[in-house]
Length: 125
Image 1 (cartoon, rainbow, N blue to C red):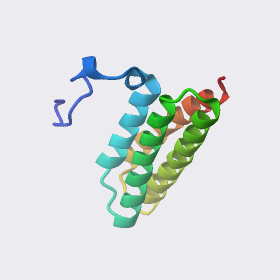
Image 2: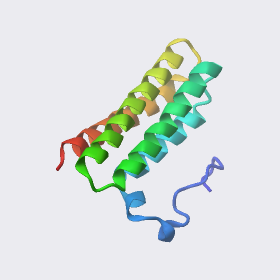
Image 3: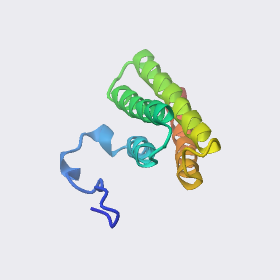
């Protein structure tokens, strides 16, 4: 456990599958955690943001395990859409005072990094 009582990803590292060791998987998991921890005060935006973040993480994860180019692209595109939805919900929440600026900035920065990684996966054959 970290000092803030949040579990770390250092445990069970020997039991992870290969896709769970990828940088994009680790970043996407952290992104979903950040959105969850942001505690957006507007119920509707909080649900939208957390649902979209979880969807992004799970769709990415499913795509990472596939070998077919078309199916990988389908899941990576869906993950990218959910990523943008999450970033927009958090951005809007911050703009109306329903999320802290520091939390929103962390989400936006990591989201932009994940978007670049997704773009790379979509354009690699």
